Length: 348
Image (cartoon, rainbow, N blue to C red; front, side, top):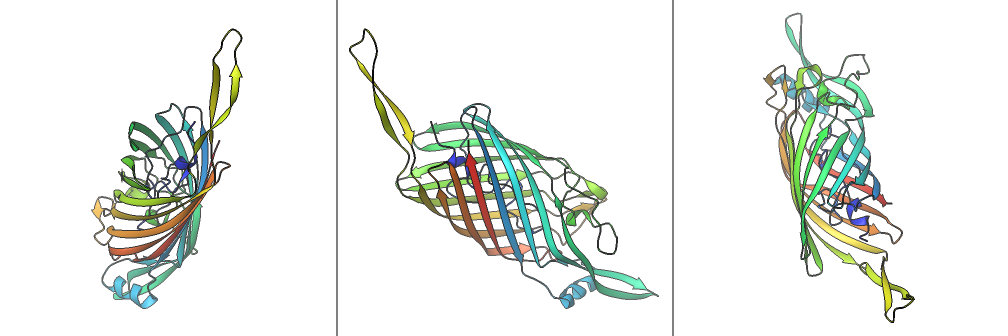
């Protein structure tokens, strides 16, 4: 029997690998054993269950009040925050050996959200910073199905499809009692489909992983359509420690038979994986009431080194630190400084 640990890796990237701090992350269910932000092609055996939790800390390249006021003077309603925390819990179930179903529920926290505001008072323009305050709440849940197409010669390929549900709140208010824009809400109020694919292969002592996911945004709360999102990447990993192998349980004799039968049992030892991944994130511009917000959206390329511990008892824990190598983010959003992700999973 294959262990469940490889299935339990890191964040699923289907809802996350966030280039933009207002988007939630996902749990530790469904990630790759060779990375922390890629999808894995591995599926659970029929009847097996796994659970996972992940936590991401997103540190933006903070902008001063003067910078926000200057952007507001250009009619760019930019925002900023001290940091973002995105957490998620997920479960997965092996419907068949090839088909695994999973569900994830995120929780979003954005600390000290601020936004530039442009208005006119007495016929004169007024540019100022609105102190929105901290925003938190349950985000939009996701349902995912992963189907393993092939597994041969150390290479595994799978396809993924899913749906994001409008379970998160879209009625949060600022400290002054004003309804927040949809992009600042924990939930978008929209039903969004997702499609993707994943692959892993063995290269001697290394493992190569690759995946891609596309998230189709639809119109949600306040007649807002957040931009479509896409994430893709590759990763290399190396395992330190013994790999799972077979142990003989013993010899059994059957009445009337001369032959002896030996039964093998899978045996695991604790091990470590060191990995490095290169990922790219893209987000399209959002629209409000059919009007395109030109300064939203963007793209970025991340380098994320990390490590994973695989316990002999069936659980795993991973940590990765993402650094942006290149980014082109719309001025409405702050640039990224770095992000840290912790993922924990357990197979049953």
